[in-house]
Image 1 (spheres, rainbow over the protein chains, first blue to last red):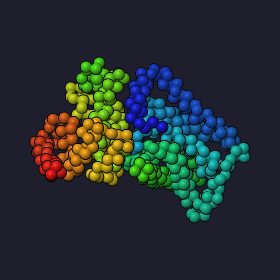
Image 2: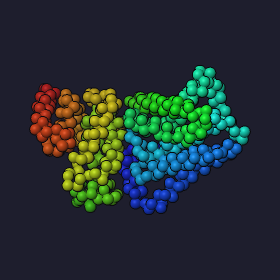
Image 3: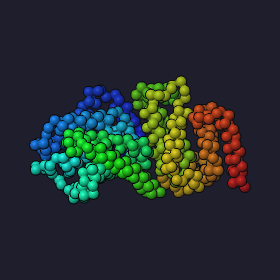
Length: 235
Length: 185
């Protein structure tokens, strides 16, 4: 990971070089990244839920690909690729959006109930089944949707921000709000699947609220925690 | 290219000239690092590297907005000041105005020209002297007496009246003189 004085100089020099690249070369880089993240995801989802596919799945998939394309665009936008604590660039937001998109796809495999889909007979990881049953016992479907949104987004945020811990150190409130919005944006394809189900339609707002609160609280907590750790290590 | 003014280099950098950027960076690297070191307490020196990088990142991102009819140095220092102000506002600073710690200043790799040129003892005295000033006085003294900016440039950077800058500078110098005289005694 870059961090020193010579790195800021070289990363700006690289950014200036990137600005001179032809649009075709840049588009190829974006397409390569998009293919690298979408082919495995689409492949696993198709393999797992091939019997469930309908129009809503198609719309959801198109939206997922659209968000992934914009994440790849922001990732490869010419800019200095250096991580400075508390300074967020579109490259880092792009990277974070990719991570959240991957995690949102994994969510479907881990807990297909959140889109009212039965676990896949071909491939499923039902590790969160006891947790869902506990949430259901607290207050039925409404409680399950809220707490599932909260806990999944908290786990996703913890994983993503741990990977990007240097950038997350001491993140300001504006950055935390943007991180939360990115997390919610990555959940949008799942929301489409939830809206498609008559039973879930009345509860998806709770799931969305839970997701937003989960990512907001975890990113604020991690920002302070990483700052304290880096301060303690440097002194 | 070496004879070109900062403003001409910045104009070329705006157009994407890598050589012009390198020249500007090399011209201001030590100076800007020294400025951050003087503005922060020795315990904050590890963060000074982050502020230095952040200043160049902000400069790069906003380079198109540079007005080449104006001077480059005050513009760069305005960005640096804003980075520092953001830091102070966020409450991240815990050790401002701490007494000078010789070991910290030399072991963190962020040593300045001052520490080697004028000697550590004198540097310690000056740092101590600066610590008696208010934050705004310290800012004005550093920009004027260390960085060599005129009162008009400082007033533009800090968003103050020229007369206020001169008044604050005069008061700060008097306080520093008194303090340094006492230290010599």
